[in-house]
Amino acid sequence: MKRPSMKQAALRCTALLLTVASLNACAPLVLGSAVGSAFMATDRRTSGTQLEDKGIELKAANRAREVLGERGHVNVNAYNRQILLTGEVPNDGDKVAVEQAVARTENVTGVVNELIVGPSSSLSTRSSDILLAGKVKATFIDARDIFANAFDVVVERGDVYLMGLVTEREANRAAELAASISGVRRVVKVLSLISEDELARKLPRPPASSGNAPAQP
Image (cartoon, rainbow, N blue to C red; front, side, top):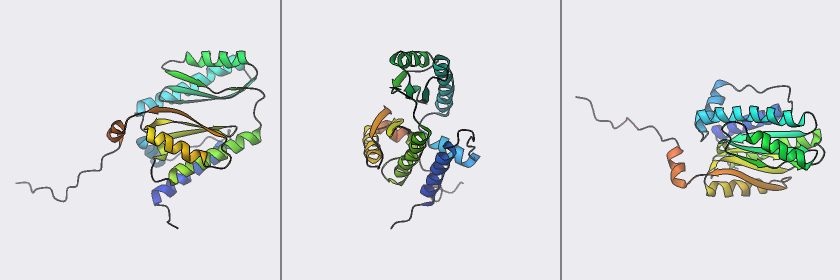
């Protein structure tokens, strides 16, 4: 069996740390500067868009809480200024009200409303979802034909939502990989598509070799 590279092992370790830390909502995860910088550098969004998405998540989550209070369980994820809503709300009116509230968040370009009308999921279900998300991320890291860090993975009740800035080829491959994992009920692509040419422009270029540089006069 081929051993994973040091980079793959580091990414898998980071995915595991993120999964374990997520199991305890009261214990925030603090990544070291090297790991955090590496993930930001390989994200296809600009650093400004990444920070903006974090701000959108916080503001939209506050708006959802203002609508529901403690009556529901809503998760807000933002990628490239698009919001994904998952979780449970008491009725259809609340589902519409939450969507309308978060859509008014500054700089949001769209809302994908996957909220379910029904009772809030149990702690055991949420824990299973977190572990399943870790499996999906690890599978992406092991794959040699996609960039794992190009995708954000959200899991709710066994449904896998993929967010990211990817080509159609990458989107289909990631969905195929996620669907092959035991416990995944369905895969939903909430992705921003780019062309292969756009991807090539976004990929980092290797540094030019100076070994054969002509001698200076």
